[in-house]
Length: 390
Ligand SMILES: [Zn+2]
Picture 1: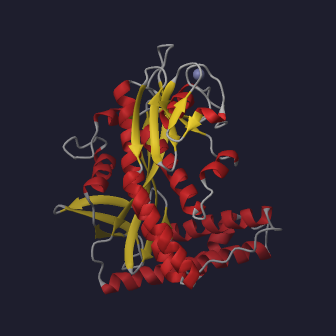
Picture 2: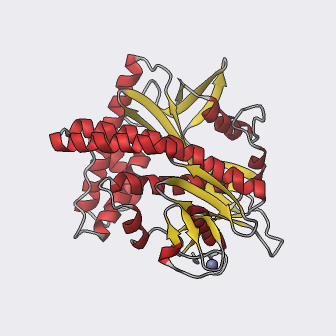
Picture 3: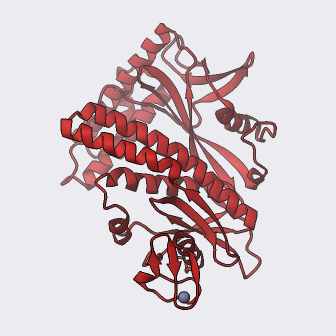
């Protein structure tokens, strides 16, 4: 069994001005309580939790459950500070705080076809939850439906038969926040996924070689099947952004630079979604149970790949693809494992010889007679390398 936690974000549906003002009051109060709680703890480190709650309750307008969430967060930040006093400054919370709700304190219900969210607020009687409409799309409504009904809506376009591996869905904590003048409610769900059983000894793996020229190559050494995710469509985008970035850096236009980076990130985010999905599909099609990635946490490979000045966005793109593969694989009951990245691109898949000059441009040619597209060879090597433990 495996657990996957995801966060689902829903915009509130046109909250009235009055409601928005109320949320603002709530988050300011939440922030005040956070600061008050850490101060109480600092003056009296041995104080009991119930006594902190009593003190907070004396003058707070927030519902008790929300006060308790503030106290919980404040104490965890305080403990964190206490342990790392040398490097961390004393926790201070800014005014625009995200308001937290534990999983018992928020609910969904359908009302005339609208999805409504119930959270404790300061409106009217404190104990009553007030329901506000939230907006869903096909993707978010798939998960909301699953959460509310305990079963998946098979007519939803996001439904995939491999989701049948998911045997349980649990509701997690929720949070209310404002971003760019819009209000959102985000909540987490934890899925329990049944892992596919490994009965046969010759279990197939897919190795993924991530690169700049080819965004990724997925290949299975055991069967010789592979798929290339060409970087052509991203290549010109990268060059364009690289050029623009240089210009803006020269002009020291930081604001425009940030905007450009955000935009580039969105483009990469989109393609990483597409590619990770295709890699998973490829693994399923050939019946592989494991996806192997190079462990790039070490520095070795980075030097090779990120000579360019725009290394940050590249390292982010690599890492982002990894996260997306991980999460999509888990949802489908596939394993993700890591291998040592040492000279994967110089090793011959057929005879195991490691020779730098075997790789010339896009081709890998070995004296043993083996000849393959270089990134495909690397993906085969990765697919058959032993996984690093842990
Ligand atoms: Zn060879």
